[in-house]
Image (cartoon, rainbow, N blue to C red; front, side):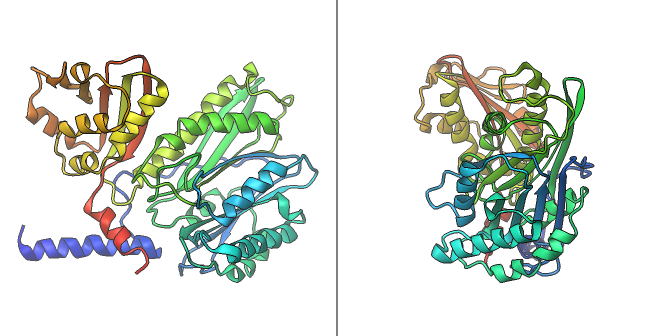
Length: 437
């Protein structure tokens, strides 16, 4: 390739990166689903999206969700010590929530995270909650607020207040896709999923949306995710189910090792399904529901990784033989978050020595002379050295695939864990170097 062609290619990639930041048409991630799924409506849930121009122009950037009277809701949030005003509002609202004949509301904006904004952030969050509450005829404490985007800039909440009435007047049971698009920032495609299962012979529906592309190393949730079901499940049981599902989905993915100030994941249950109410998460009737919910949460979490900023590879990291499951997860995240590992995948270089390094730096117990490493089904290393059967050309050929699996058995115990990540490319640097430009 000539120098001119190199420059032209670089300019094209930079334009795509900047377009993603500014909400313009951009190249969709090569790891994106080939077609967007059909989102099943949830009885008792309506959504809407409009343009407020908080940061972007020419696109929707505010989303509203309403859950009918009698609904319950659960949530998990970032553990960041610099979490945003909306997260603090939601944590308080959830802790004080009581059953009521009033509906529940959610309002979310993209382009500005309203994080590290002091008392002004609290003012903006309250204004969004109060405005939504008035439009829906409920108490502000029954409104959950979420914001995503730039940190440290005051949120122009007046722009959001100006469109709240329009949001309330255009709520629609089929508004999931519009809502998912409205909460995007550097995302290149909206992330949605739907599934069904049964409880007591009744068909139950679960649907959800998520956003996330960068600053993804969740610690209780992801950037933003909103899910709902028509199942008749009480508050405590719903919270337990969400906690369990989050541990093996959003808390098992990483794009860049950075935990957001704004991570928010909500699960609402409208209780419209015709089965008796379930109050205990251990109830045997929830077996199929738990499986379906976990699958949906993993689907959304995987979509976040597949839209990782600049990503070209989707990577599953499996760790076995660790002292405990927690130890295995720490080792897996050490591999998944290593810049050296991620750049090797980007360059399609089967540099298995970097896997060895990442296992060792985790701080968890590992037997160097029992360590086994695989790329897919290819045995790469065993017994503390490269496997006799391994051929470098086989590893290089495997690396050319878009979906990759890396396995490491550390030879200590029975602990195991799986996490998902993406590679680290030049495009990630371009996107984040120019994020506020």
